[in-house]
Structure formats: structure tokens, C-alpha cells
Amino acid sequence: MVEFEMLRKTVVAVALAASAALGGCASIGAPEKEGQLAAAGFVRLQADTPQKAAKLQALPQNTITYAQRKNGSVYIYADAAGCNCAYVGNAAAYQQYQQLRAANNIAQMQETTALLNAEAANDWGGAWGPLVPGWY
Image (cartoon, rainbow, N blue to C red; front, side, top):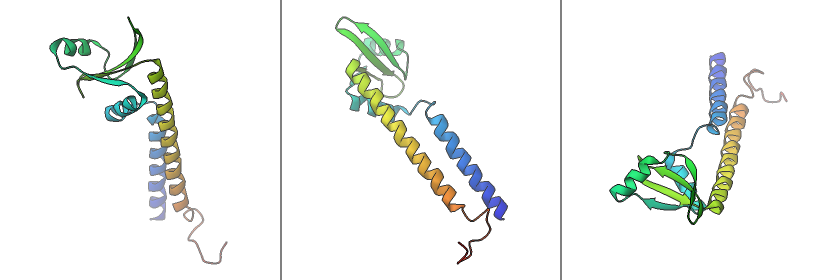
């Protein structure tokens, strides 16, 4: 029974570590990303006409792309399937978005580390046998 419990805790710890490692590689969910874009200063433009919807569909979806326009360079995040909108920002907004994203990744890594440390602390007595009062 003790071996099964140790195996279960090890599997949980490995799963948490793997999800933390892969979390930086995988794209974050659209609602979270759209919230970060809005917080960074990107403007949400709704595709409310057939012409705008066609232009939105032509853009790469769920990724930030760089485009040169008459007024200067812009960064565009298109989400036709989710919100049927595009988030458009300038270079300053894109830089702010990158900073928010980095801060979010650090916070997620700290949370995962805390969970792994708590899991390890719960298993302290397993390898050493039962904790006996006075046996320090």
C-alpha cells in the first residue's frame, strides 16, 4: 500500500512537471491571450460586415502576425472562430504584450514549483518509514 501511494505521488509530480515544461511550448487559450492583448493596448475590431469577415478569414488564425500599413507597422491577432474579431496593436502594444506574457509564464512556473514542493513535503515520511515522535 505504501509503495502504491509513493508511485501515485511520483506520477502526479511527473505529470505536474511535464505540464509545466510543455506549458511554455503550447499556445495559451484564446480567452487568456485575448485578455493579455487587450491589457497590452491592442484594440479589438469586430468583423461585422461580410467584407471584414472575409479579410479576417484570410489572416493567419490565432497567432500574432506583423503587417506594414500606410500608417506604420501593426501587429494583428485574428480569431475568426472564437470572437469573430481581430486585435490590432502597434509596436509599443506588442512589446507590452510580450512583457505580460513573460510575467505570466514566470507566475505559472512559480505556482508549479510550489505545487511540486508541497507534494514532495507530503511524501517526506514515505521513504524513511513512518514518522516516529522523537525520531529527529
